[in-house]
Amino acid sequence: MNLVIDQNRLRSKPHEPFAPLEAHLKAAPENMAVLTDTAVFEMLEGNAPVYVASKSLEILSKYPDQVLATDGTGVLMRKELADGKAIAGLVSDDLTKRLRALLRKARLYYD
Image (cartoon, rainbow, N blue to C red):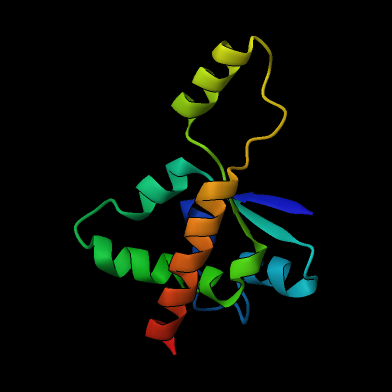
């Protein structure tokens, strides 16, 4: 099952043994977290973007092969216009591959 996540779902809450996101990923290897471009931008907002980004990537870095990345809205719109039909899938293979590589590197930081 795919779960589209936003910035609020990326981080665990102190009173929960596992965040809902982590529980979803831990439950089955075919469960995926879908990360949108908006969630990435939100992850870098605020007064302490490095701190927020490190907290936001911690859970995902445990399950890099269960993370999918979507193309940005502008990219998807241009594809639809060029093809003259609706987009069949939002996931970008290239962005997913790059995000997974980033998550594996981030895991070294947490370990």
